[in-house]
Amino acid sequence: MAAEFSFKNQFLLAMPGLTGSYFGDTLTYICEHNAEGAMGIMVNRPSHISLIELLAQLGIDKGHTPVEVPVMEGGPVASDQGFILHSTEIKFESSLALNDGLSLSSAREVLEAIANDEGPEDYLVALGYAGWGRGQLEDEVADNAWLTCPADTGVIFNTPFTERVNKAASILGIDFALMSGQAGHA
Image (cartoon, rainbow, N blue to C red; front, side, top):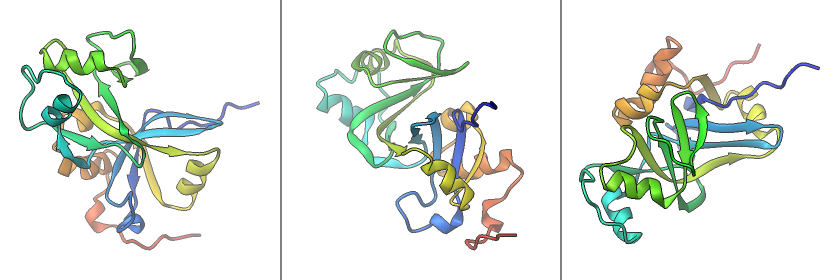
């Protein structure tokens, strides 16, 4: 029996047809995808809260946290729960390894390390996540709701959030500005 295809460690780029919906103009990193469903973090939509404000709400001293770091809106599920995508040069027992250079955590210890300038070099903090049930993501991709491409940590950590969708599309050689919102079916 052939192994099932997984979108894990892929980006989902919202196709122009999703413009105006919750996921319109988003880039989502898929953290897990298996027979039960999928889980991802949107990486390009800043929330209304900064990391300093989040730390204050959690009673964590802001320490060396840069003022301008936004917290991303990770998705519509569990929007009161924090998630940290981070590089792996510092290991945290609470973090789940996603690939060779990226881990995911929801632990307070990672936020405390970031605030104390003892955390990972690269990180993205998000509230909430995007979730799909069994077969749902596969159906949405087949219906042209999403374009997929291999994830690139440089897009997540080194590209301004307003440019992340286009940077990810360029991995595929696509200019989203030239794409129509109408899906074609052969």
